[in-house]
Length: 506
Image (cartoon, rainbow, N blue to C red):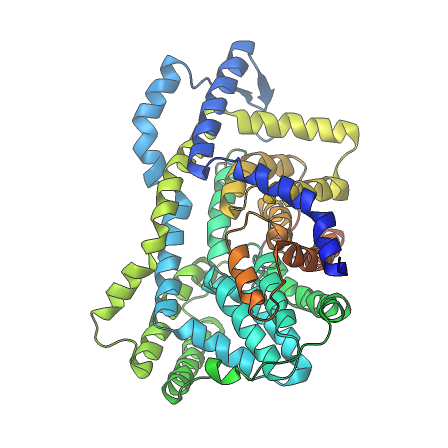
């Protein structure tokens, strides 16, 4: 039996167990229905037992409310639709998806990735693949397919093992998915949930989509360095020498029209940035706040709408020049197509919105946060150990539940208030979750994109399978986790800003 076969055999039982356990989980919609039912029962028991706490902020006594009662039933009937209609993340996510999905439909994002990966010198090819892949969340999950495929072609074109490129792209787009140099859809989605959870403690609390921007901006570069190290020291030596079957770089090259369209999009991007710079940089800029600052002005508050405008307009410029937009009617058509894959999310949000608001109604979030914070403080389990505990918890849960937003909907009402009770900002609680949620994406056997990645790899290595992918993704996951933990500790020790106007501590 070959060494590769022995490795697969030794890891098979563990992988089979994880896959079986993950497959037994119900659909997220059904899962949240069960959570609503469990919550209702727990709320009834807590209410009957007279469970209560004192809000440390206001000094008021907070008692648990039962959902299985006359008042609870009436509340649910009166608020069922309102819970869904006022669910903050829904509108933000749909708007971002319209804009980014439109840019994807006209071909802009794919072409930009192709040009960036295939046009760099050999010495920085791995770093470029990782950098683009980590920033791939701009293009949502499309990057998980596009970046690894193009990276494999780029590596083969310069005589490097294509599977090494594919794995670097896959690790970057999954284990580093949450990091990005600009505010992306992930930031919008998570911040809305974080704000709802934070308001369980302080109803006036707001959480902006830029609250993790500085931390995630730096993460792009630290993870890129870590990924280059892993690729060079672990992946390439293990794969060995690759004997190319032919140069396929030409298949992924750009046409003359695509190149012209990409240049036009680049010129527009520069002009777009300059236009907003003129509204922000001058002391009297119209996007500055009343006090003259940028942080308290409409520029930061309106950054998400600005990004929406950008992706739509740059998509129009590219589409017109490239010929993918034939007439003005194609614009709303492509926008509608960008939302076709969101129907499942909208259905899921309906039951998630009920769970979040039911959790708020019961006051269990406040009760759990206060009692947990007291227990952790009494046990001396606070600070860095507490953060590491939650990061590792998210890493483990991610092996069985791949929906990042779904997990945050569950964790946020508990983690955010509890961290606030310990003096940490909601934005920092969100950082802790994002680290744990991302690192194990690449080694989750039930992840829907794993079969696609294996299929791509089999083009170059017929024996490549699940065990091969997991074993080669593990060094990336561990390296990213270690780098992120060190970076988090640095942020805590020096109380560095997580985003514009947002610190680690309250």
